[in-house]
Image (cartoon, rainbow, N blue to C red; front, side):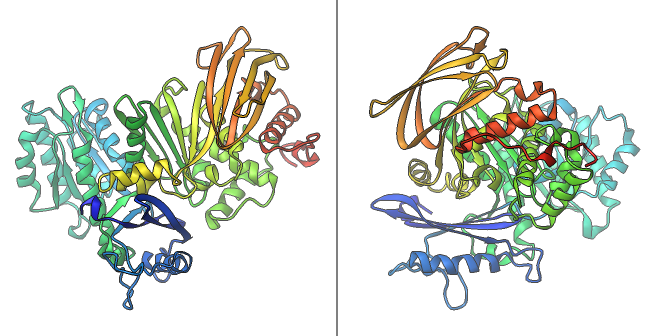
Length: 581
């Protein structure tokens, strides 16, 4: 559909817990987010139909927006008709459901297997096994590995176009033997993206037994070409979802097809990086999984951990991360079994809010630890490489306190320098990313407009200094001429509020031995937002706390600083009790 013919867009994102719907319209010639709603995802229930939850949301949105979405038969009306009836385009994304099980087959783990992992990252695919020339298994061991992994997808890569053929033909023959030994009703789809000269051979060898998808070689010269194979994976994702009972009705109405939420987020991350000409990092912590997507220098790298979430997967996250790593972010000794009980309860009631400050600290600790668990896969991160961080997921965007969101981000990433922070409080990132190929003008206008919330600027001081020494001198000049001067001490944070649509001129100078992104002097024009500006000079105070009392005092003091709490910090006596209390 031509963008000029799209005046109204309905977007729906189906998550593991919640379904979000958004109405985008042209208002005075510009696209704006004019309505949105959220409700429980109706999957895994008696209905097993995601449509039911969406229909309930749209009925409420009809009341608030005055637009009718469905006809008498419950079908979405398209295109838009007179008197605000129907919409021109219906876009659907989803992260709900179990990840696809895949076996990666290639030549070398550092090359073809690594490229395959990067390609599948935003498609909720678990690489449950790998088969390659360095696996040490031999033909029989490889055969058993493929069969016993019970894959739904076998992804074959390897070789350069015009390169060696014999070894890759052996891998194709091995795959053929493995699928012949599987029950016909449970045979996987095979995706081939290796040496293009063997694409016809792959189809001839396997198409009698399984569905075969062919993509251009993922290896192109000394580099990679992920987009072509990811286009094929997008089509496969849609095919799998539209044949599931839960999404059949939604798929029949969708214009975009069912696309992965993470793929939309990854696309928008890359879109931002190209538009701003600087590195962009997106962090999305959901109920079932956590995603990091980093775009810089013309490349995008995405990591999705399907069993690392803050709700449905909280217990699995605890098992993966470990009690000790989570406890280091708590201002108290967790009682025996307390973390396990908390994560179990979150799995059962994933949308529930923390009952008290103790549970809130556990939730924030799990958030920090989950992001830190995945961070090494992206390599070194600092403010010189990343200019913008996009936050998604209820824990990171739903606190209502922008400075707190930035404090948690600082703990999770431990980068150096300055970053701008935006929040996706409406859950529009996957919609905007998926919409970019259909209506790029709409995406740009929504970004400039009201779709994303500007949180603020996060400034991190790095180096070593004794607690209580002046770490950085700050001179802040507001637009109306007000000047604020502050000395931020080592071990402290300072939150400077700044209303949205305003700006602050910050001039900062660190003490000797400290820096901000490698600079002792820095001038920054900070945009106002919910979080204003946050100067983080805590340095190694967290790791350097020698007693639980010292850690608790520090953490509660930092929390008070970013939430605007005044008066002395009170520590509940129970927080300082022993491990077995």
